[in-house]
Image (cartoon, rainbow, N blue to C red; front, side):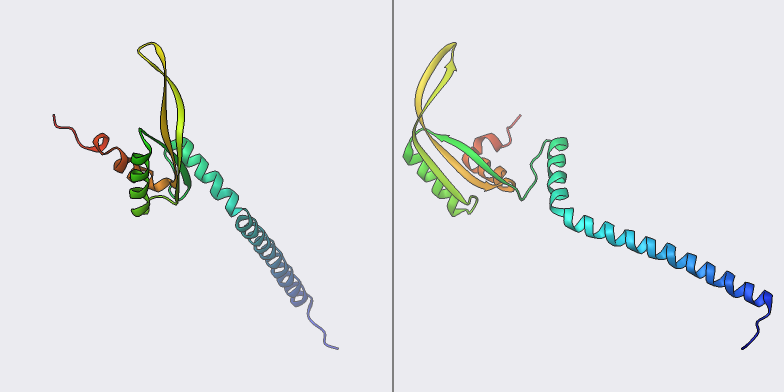
Length: 146
């Protein structure tokens, strides 16, 4: 059996206590980091959706990558088919539904008017809405001369 001097023994105890304290703090920080990482990975889809909604609410703009449905009216069925085919050929929409003979009512010069029109439901990505609008209504997007 070896005998260690008392000051040497105190030194060993102090050293072990300091290392144990360091290891416990390190273990706590590592555990908390792992827990936060697992929570952030598991909550990512929900956080992404909330972020997209907040961005849309604050900026008033659409978030690219999300899907939208455009409603376009047309005076007759042939014009709707022509517009729909052109949009599909440019690959701006996933699908287009043409609803024939839709009744509409509106105010015109203080009177209620009734008419029929053809509605097109264009299912597309939100990021492509601007291109579709520019194709369907080109006169709205041309710069005006002063």
